[in-house]
Image (cartoon, rainbow, N blue to C red; front, side, top):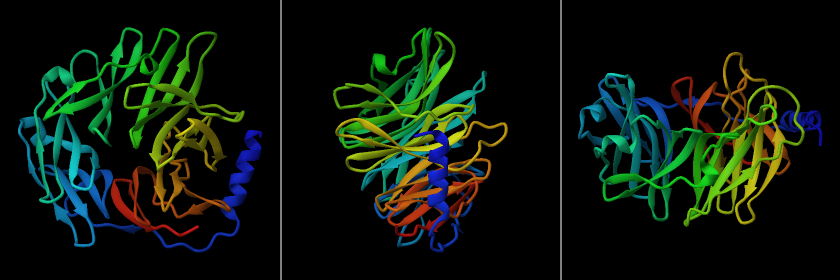
Length: 359
């Protein structure tokens, strides 16, 4: 199907037959400036900072609960908490602050419990996440064998993804497989990650340098034995200019959903985990914002993917059996997560909530 047909289809479904929905409502976080979100049972974890240091908050039916934080190093005491994940009882967090003589990010690693609500940092050897080849830490993940951190580092041929795992309180990198390592002809970029059972998914792109420049949206799928494979996401002949990359991934039991941008269009894909088969769901309405590289975000609410496009005119789109429908937009979204039937977003630096409609 031509790209124009996809756009027309998505637009028609969004505008047709939509029932009224509630508006996004602000959520009070006290003095916490929110940066990252994660579901925690029937509650929501909100990570960020206050004027005096890092902060973590849980919002649930019993009211807001502030975590007691125990930073074990100076950089931890100054950090902003930028990534968070949780099991039913455990919490894992990444913090960062710019510091040192070269003004580099100084990463701090935290873990704790939801009951009691406590979080402590654990100093790591400097070269665990730092050094001349250091790259960003992109996500903290919960896997059946324990927490993991996805990051990237550089090599003489480009970037490579690195998965860090923990023994006790000590983190160390696992060897990067060839599938996640740039070569002289193909440069890899990594945006986000999610887990589905024992599988880890990394969203990003590859840039082909030989015979002209070509960028493709890609998902990498890895299993418990590090049997990583590259999965190119279909683009259906979408025409235009701009970046082509997967920017966010969210998972259910046997299906994961991916959002990204392809040649100036926000796009949604589904991925059958059992067969590693990707499907282009729709090209969604929206133009890229001027001067920015847009990053579409995706979450799963009541079994249905919802995409915040972060287009020039930001929109939120819900995939229903009858087609995609437009939800109210809170603005430009930097974090998106579902808890039960509610969507939470950090939009323009503030936490907000929407009671998502049933399809």
